[in-house]
Length: 105
View 1 (cartoon, rainbow, N blue to C red):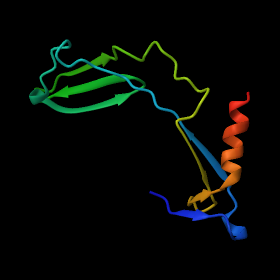
View 2 (cartoon, one colour):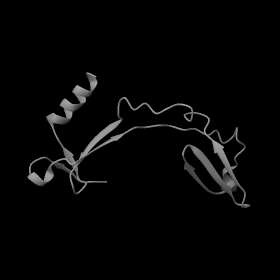
View 3 (cartoon, helix red, strand yellow):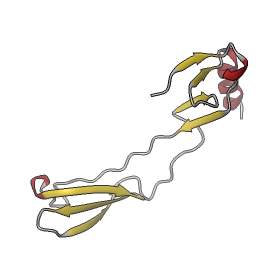
View 4 (cartoon, rainbow, N blue to C red):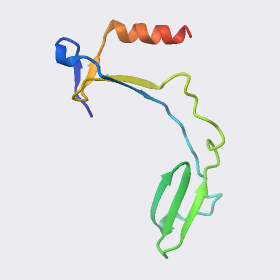
């Protein structure tokens, strides 16, 4: 995780604003007849669960929830400012003011 610093020195000017959004995808392992004891490896990419079983078989599973829904980008779950060293910068009142102005839109 990054260090959190207060905006006091010139080098601590915020250079990057990062907004995080949360999207949840779900796979019901029981409904999909997935035995977790038989899984060798898995990964999720573009909303698709890719499972490689211990017997070498690979199967792709689409998510039951969330794939057809678009992420709501109207309000971020978290907003963070970073300086050029990618340390988190606290802007104090400005961060509150930005959130307030965004709510007015």
